Image (tube, rainbow, N blue to C red):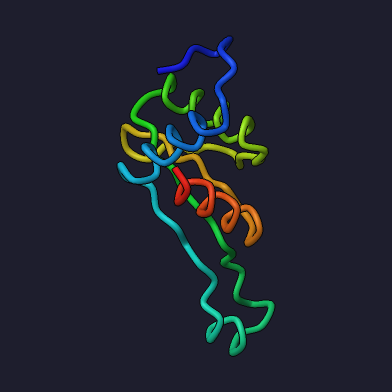
Length: 102
């Protein structure tokens, strides 16, 4: 694990984010049919969620996202884990391209 003071290269950042994503991250995509039917009533957007098993992992995930040029959303606890969301169609596409290349 990289320390907070270390500057990671882009391949290292991508690899670490890919590790977290492939371990137990997930993507929520916009349901185009439902969006067309319900219009503004359908509020679900594109989102990636990374799962952290501790506050230390959460801090690392947030740091890695920022190093990758992405703005993390507000994390929340679920069970004994933390969820780190990343919102927006463009941010989700950029994140998926980043971890795919790793």
